[in-house]
Image 1 (tube, one colour):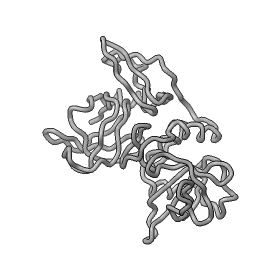
Image 2 (cartoon, rainbow, N blue to C red):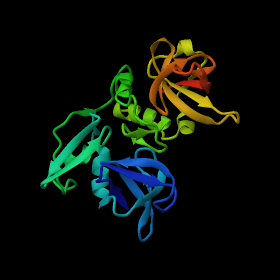
Image 3 (cartoon, rainbow, N blue to C red):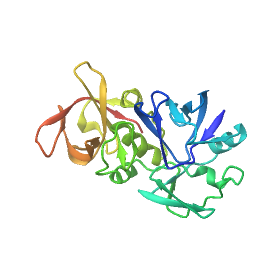
Image 4 (cartoon, rainbow, N blue to C red):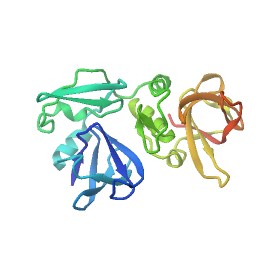
Length: 252
């Protein structure tokens, strides 16, 4: 069974309970497969990154297999502004940066006849555009499982920046670290490459986007800019290292 998120920002939880941990968010227009259904909750797998979790049955709409395929086979269109609005049927719905508006072009799927006349981004963008997109999230508060400028975690930040530029990467930092080409030195990196950081057990726990002149933009307390050296991230406010560098990956 296939479905589509028809609300702005919906929590995806670890267990079928409103008290359960937020594992990620489902943004407007995202599609998914329903794996298991209960009276009030459904376990789903997101189409874009195969991430799984539980979603409230009142917070999505069922679509047919043909409609699902139609959405996947056509170009993706994403909301390009921090916040914008959809109108239709005397309603006004706010949506956030990164919302997937692809299905609005199909009359048989856009049953609410929603209209969007804001800025869109589509297709594969040049690598140099990654940093411009990253700046849109600057000062967004850290939120475990978040994917929007109103709350985002480190890997949600990197995933959304890449997604808006036409590149799909996994959801978690540990998953992202398994793709791309490893670089030996910071000096080999380019703007837009990803830097990964580990804990004392060697587990990847953090990721950020490399900038020019040994700076990095990442989500830690908020989306912020700090220094990057061979040891890791040097907090520009405290002058202390906060994360230990493990590897730099060239994804594109």
